[in-house]
Length: 169
Image (tube, rainbow, N blue to C red; front, top):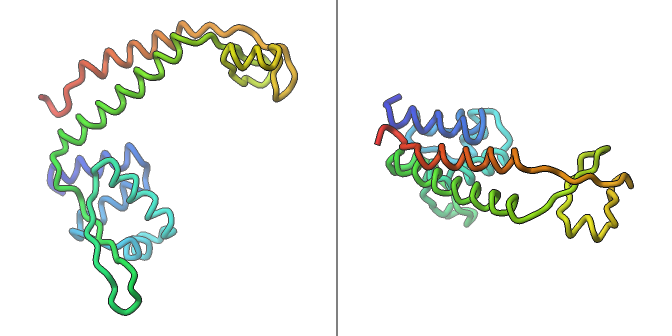
């Protein structure tokens, strides 16, 4: 496997798990493959294969071409590794992750939380007031939750990710 292909296989496995890694390795080796071929050759459920392929497509790790089966009229999808530069894929993933982390940080900063000491269910202040500060799962009285450490971890993760340059840029 060449460098770019090796990175794609590693990314697929790390992001989406062993099944994705196996699928990526197979389509790298063959050039392209249908979902049915992948299911048979790798002995995987067809729905699992399709789910993973769609996830990898959304992350730009794979691409497809579509043809129509003239006999039955259904589309056949041929999946292949992406042509996109891996650095571009990583930069896009970094950008999306930063957006999610910043949204979560904003949410943590702007809300007061309460937690059930028995079952661990977490509530916003508004939810706690609605339920008269009692857990709707078990009835236990809710306790105030100090989310300072969560905020600090999110800030640190954002700081680290903003400073990260994929592939030695």
